[in-house]
Image (tube, rainbow, N blue to C red; front, side, top):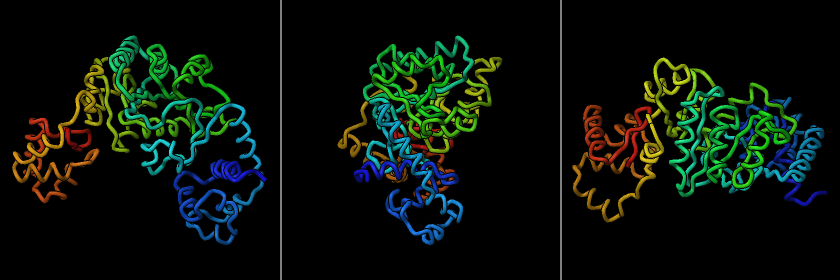
Length: 370
């Protein structure tokens, strides 16, 4: 019998191998039984009573082949310095954990902090132009020196690879989220880049070894890139593609999205221009724009300064300030309901307070304090 901690690891890994049990249902099982070990050792009758599980998946929990495969995966991790980060672990990305479709297990190689203070995703087309190359490198050069910064991308050809490679050159940690197991690198010509990234960054995936980079895996990979990040930057993309999927996912998670604008005749700028036009992404032209958008450029006012400013506001403005306090962002409609102000009054106050530098407008009619 394995020691408890190693035995529980096998059961945790095994939980990810059961066909038909995705992140949401796995959370239900963990909430009901308390641990992966208890899930696999629960009576069959009790398993069948779990809503959404069904007889086939309940029987799968009793399949010894799944535990055998999980034990083999644990041996692979041990031999290749791969860490299994479970959703209840302190090392699990807190930003991702807040997403309802978060993977229950992440496989990680490398020393990167998955909960760095500033997490930026940089994504784009696999077939970049020189403009995309220059914008990506210029952005990272201007962000160099930002304390606690971690750059995330998908290790794909094009903009992803450019971002990772520039980070390595600048000595900035970077995480590559891949759509396959960590027994391989795709694309193959990024093997050396991946090795260099592991010095201070990481490779990360929700897929166990032997998983090929199948087409269906990439949207799942994209949600991790978006979910782990404070902001997703789209450098270049067609109006359709993986980078756009990542941007829409980031917006659905109520995360910031930014994009570099381009000429209307350039196909690779069609995606960013659309995101900006639809008010999904904020327009940026450099790293300073990103820092300003994320309020990284300067410190917030002290508590005493905030109290003095609060006393100078009208009662209606104070209501809005109080509602937005400690909020990452709030929709204008929710703000109106919270404060009891009329639609017209709320809109006028928000515009005035934005001009005063008190609030910042976010994509999707959301607002937060500056």
